[in-house]
Length: 139
Image 1 (cartoon, rainbow, N blue to C red):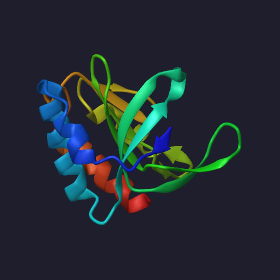
Image 2: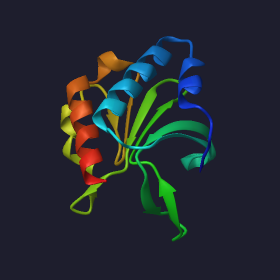
Image 3: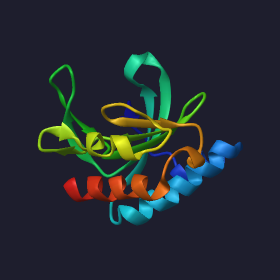
Image 4: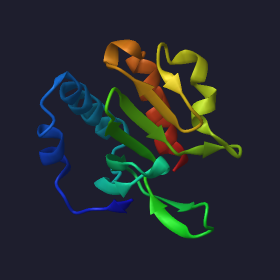
């Protein structure tokens, strides 16, 4: 995936369904909780080889599976086919921060660095924003 120069607001406005509203709500809340962090649209092949568009917040250096150091986002937001994903790449004590929040995230499907849910009603918004704030503090 590559960071683009495309306008994030234009991208988010182009999503017309209910998830678009949820994405815009999440975007506004993440921006407030990560003041001063860069916000970019990333596009390209993601894990598993699927084409993706992810709004990334904050910038960090990341060593990928090939051993190359690349620029990556601290928190990411994406619309998938059937759900919304929030990626949290922040690490605390050598582990993804998300693990500390896993049991507090409601109906969300939680992986090592990703949270997926159908809509905002499926996840406790205050807990999700607490996670975002802590991720920003670790970056």
